[in-house]
Length: 389
Image (tube, rainbow, N blue to C red):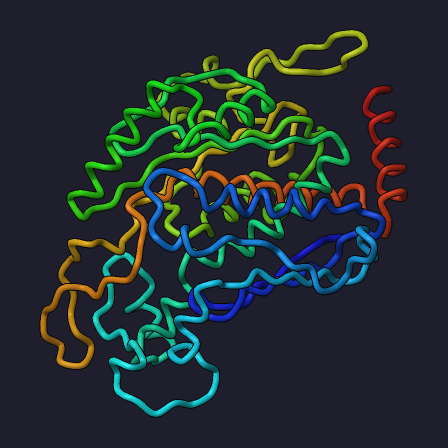
């Protein structure tokens, strides 16, 4: 058994839509918790005006009855509150009018999908590209991930995220539990645990914004309670760390992924990288450290899963870069769409949810069943088998 989802919708369209297939029946959903995760995605120092307009909520329109999944596909909708201002420009019906009335985009922005997408799909109005390639789509992915998160919580699996770096400002390392990370980062405008670093990052982002520029950073996701054996070594596409890496790289503006110590492993000796195996009566097998981020051989090893992702600066700048007008082929400055100076704290939330989705997918592949009761029985049987090993 596996799960999947598809999303549809544009950044200035009427709504984002997602359909989730493969969820078991009898999963109790907390609708407020889903909307809480959507609200988390909209927070963060450096976000633009749109976050003052949109107050995202997920409206479930299929696959759930009286608070529980039925086993049928789950359909959900996240409305775009800004649609009222764009209903003519983004109407599905043909319209007559000037390029200005249609808000046609013909000067592609460096770093965006505009030019590549226009060439690929033969669009002369690059709005057809930017409307779908926008990071607004991640709201639908967070909603799907929030449901996966609730599924994992039913089995004691918890997820937290934090910002490690914004531009030149790096947060000091910490070894906090997931519960502590959640509590402390939720109180921070930039999702760091250290108040002094928070103040530095806020001032840094404000300076970048005044200059009309943008800044990226590094975020980390930690997952506790993951059982040993999710994923597999037998085929390349069953390695869970590889699937997580692909999911993280699919987030808008992400350009790199690390598991555990990641690229640092390339400069250390083997004795400084690999996690020694221990055994304790009553607790079973464990590791003396977690440098490999909870993975060995493409499978979880029972240690916390640790994933980092790097987000580039948002390419829509208020001091736009040089581009070429696709009509005249003359050099111009890129067209400016509404944007954020820094979306790294929000990206941390998005990464939590794409990681949650991949772990839930692997969990269902391992312990699959059509109902929560069946899955729980399979899971408990497996835990007993591991304990006897």
